[in-house]
Image (tube, rainbow, N blue to C red; front, side, top):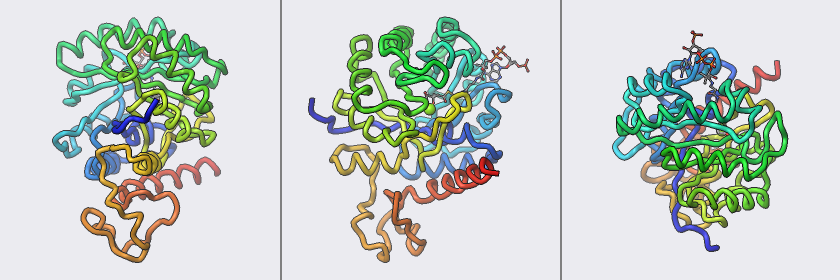
Length: 324
Ligand code: HMG
Ligand code: MG
């Protein structure tokens, strides 16, 4: 199968990226991160979650974040909602797109959202209906698609079953989450091949955590399966508090760099800055960062430097705290 000419990126940094951080992050910092990401050209940003603050303290304040971000035309600002209470809070905050999140592993479902897979799907049903009435689009997640921190191996058939249920109840897209990053390219291909028998490929997305450095390879494997929507997180931040040991998501800047190299359109202008010698100031949007020291390694786009730097600071602080 030939590679798609174009892909769509879902930036999950402010949600998946920050939900797992140890130290408190202010609403102002979250707002700045979201605004920087939209300024960088990302057109879909997961801003936060309307979940219990007892379960995920970092996502408390999502309503304030939604109230303070500068909404840019053409950008989708989405939130996670696990139940009706979450949807109601999201509606109150003016959110126009939400995501429900289920799992292909019973144990993970219990740990993450305190109910079985069947119960979670039953909870989503009224949410879907209420969202439809309010013209709110709903995306669906299936977690643990390539392994579970509690159960180990997860059968692709189980993933296909949960994905089919989410799609049937009205999720316009289902993102398959390798929550703990144990997937490898061969398994990824098999998974999408199986799930695509239940949900059209163009309605599937890939969400890869990078615990074993497999995320980019898994994205490439997904491309070969005709998948053209990918979730990523600026600076590779991320993790789920209920999936111990999982590292961050695949880094948005690395994903952009790979798609650029493959001549696959992302809609994000990398400003061609990588081809310029390090001492030369960037043109256009990159100009803002001229004169700042350039990071030789993983920086893909000067236009993304601001959010990357901030996120990297969060990450450094987290590592320091974890290592205390
Ligand atoms: P529960 O304790 O079973 O809920 O939690 P409950 O209905 O019994 O209510 C208990 C308390 O929570 C009550 O408050 C409710 O009001 C409150 P209390 O009376 O004790 O003061 N409550 C809520 N508060 C705010 N917002 C809500 C809400 N619902 C109930 N929406 C619940 C069930 C789902 C709420 C809980 O388990 C929860 O919040 N879990 C969130 C888990 C989470 O956010 N995980 C991370 C996101 S998933 C992820 O990262 C994976 C993904 O990235 C893909 C991948 O990588 O695989 C998407
Ligand atoms: Mg995730």
